[in-house]
Image 1 (cartoon, one colour):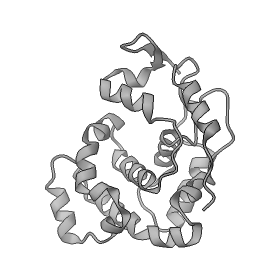
Image 2 (cartoon, rainbow, N blue to C red):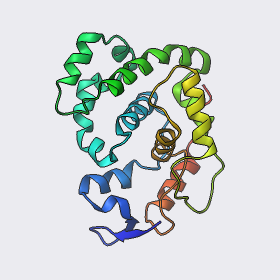
Image 3 (cartoon, rainbow, N blue to C red):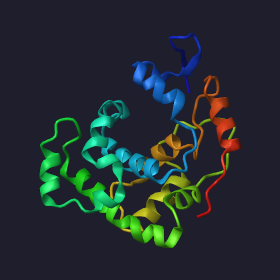
Image 4 (cartoon, helix red, strand yellow):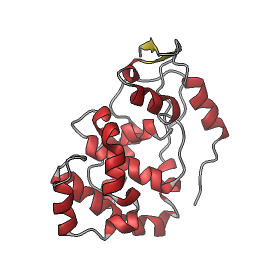
Amino acid sequence: METLAGRDGRPRCAWCAATTTYEAYHDTEWGFPVSDDRRLFEKICLEGFQAGLSWRTILEKRETFREAFFGFDPERVARFNENDVERLLQNPGIIRHRGKIEATINNARRMPELLEREGSLASYIWRFEPPRRDVPEVVTATPASVALSKDLKKRGWRFVGPTTAYAFMQAMGLVNDHATGCAMRADAEAARARFIVPTR
């Protein structure tokens, strides 16, 4: 994976050089472990919206997504009805794709069963963490992301294919795919070393 010097001269993954928003996301979020259920639910929903698009498109609309979906509170989203779907389809600040909107609502409705069985979304997700590796891989899916995708689909979740699952795992710190020369790779590793994997 390539690196480019950022505005401060430090090397970063080349993909984040396009905008300051991208760089900030790369430096403070991407690859850093997360245990908060709301953030995990938001991210897996947004990764579903990203399917076929760039993450930059989603990131630039993220605040509007948060407003439209009430902060990705699964309990509130689960109560959305057809009127809410139509409302969202008229919102130019999000991706107006009926299938993705309905998948987000569906996934919120699948949350209670998952929480009852697993205790938390975090404890469930982190069960799929693959072995740590010293060198990042340039891949779109892995056996771990295939396993996560397959299990979520079995539970009735939608727009959670292996590529979407892998992008989610990269972003939420289950995988550290910062380039070897990236200034943030060591920070992400240190954050993972301090991180306590949730068990319930």
